[in-house]
Length: 378
Image 1 (cartoon, helix red, strand yellow):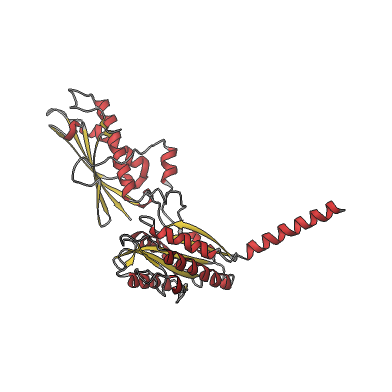
Image 2: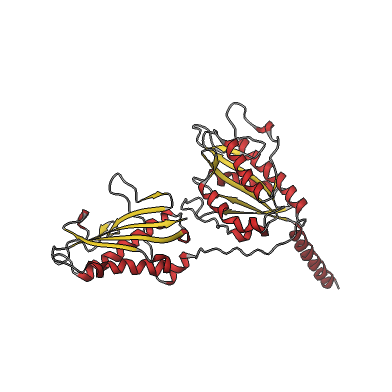
């Protein structure tokens, strides 16, 4: 009898725990972070959200990051936003505005806006500033973007001032906590800023819980053209090398508007692969192998240019192949087909491009090939 009673008590406890979990507000802490400052605040926001055991939080990025501190964080999708009872948005301050990464993510929410998908969901904001100049403008810009969606904007209000060190500048604001990350000789976020962020999360959780279940549920399917290119590359057994380091005073890529410009040679593991002139030191097959190595370098640099999300590549615009050949050589196009085929293999129709191919009497560092590439990206 005692065993039977214990069993029923255990079932009751499990059911109670399940019901309590269901009654908690589900809050997304959605951030873009460059150097980890916004992420530090996000952890405090999340801590505050869960402090009274009435909400659960999840920290996600708007785009993949190569920063070791951020690399393991999951990346959010637009279509999951409607599943939360509240969203805390965090971003660095870019010239009195939200960051490019956050702006790009919000630009994908047009379909949510047209379908009122985020209407009625509470939102709060926090930011990591440099010197602190322009932080209020940036916070207001953030609020404007979310107000267009009809989100319920939750301010930080005036709270936590007693914990602030008045001897140093602080990132306090009624619109949301900020941290002035670039000030020297002061740990950022400060103890006071950590405390304010936690209070903001705690306050926000109460609002999210109070409004939980008060808006009509909408199943909105967001059509995204982004493939998971990590899976594409894995399936095709294509391994991108590390981005080659510049050998001089230049960048691996330059972005101008929506165009990314890249130049690469046949560098592999820090050495030129199959170096030399075609017909003298190397044959056609060796040059084709070097062309593949060079194009992989191009794709690796492109991957860095789009923050690790090759789904942002709208198309390959132009490839130019330059080959280290003798004056009478005429089969440059056959050599360049290796690079063109690889672009189409990775990007499909978006990989088809305009092309130029020619020979040169010599190429820097005695590479047998150089590829110049132009890509259009989001």
